[in-house]
Length: 231
Image (cartoon, rainbow, N blue to C red; front, top):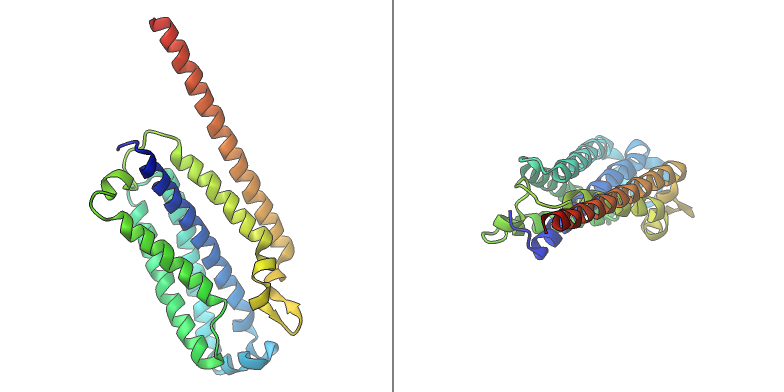
């Protein structure tokens, strides 16, 4: 595979976006569980979904399943497996379909579909990027699963972990507006768990980037020494 800089950047963007989408989808499934389990407990427009509680439980299970698929797709992309692209697209298509259905049902039953919209739009955005990557001329340069001559995939994994960790650490702030019911910010319902996961992801990503930098530095030193001896 070519080592063109723009191909490296696009590969990196794809993996990071896939990581963010997986995190959003997992959180979307987990977040819907509160309403699905106890639709009457939140009052207001949420009472409209009570007769369809079973359907929202299905949304929780299916959305979470596609989130897990998305997380596995990120690992496949980082490891540069031959089936990584196909698996990623399947996870994105599945997440998009269930998200669109969830949005339509919620808008019909309670007059709003937030915050499902954000999860769905993220899936659509990432799916669109991956489909564009398949265009002739781009795929030959970017193609996931093809031999790579650099540490780009490891760098993408580190950045994906860091950005996903930051989302876990800050989601209670920027999602509070759509998750505050009766004065309670339900985006912060799993504060301890999200903080722990967030810091672990940030640390894991940072360590990965440090190790990659160390490997690259050693390769440069070895290359210089080899040049000296050859000279």
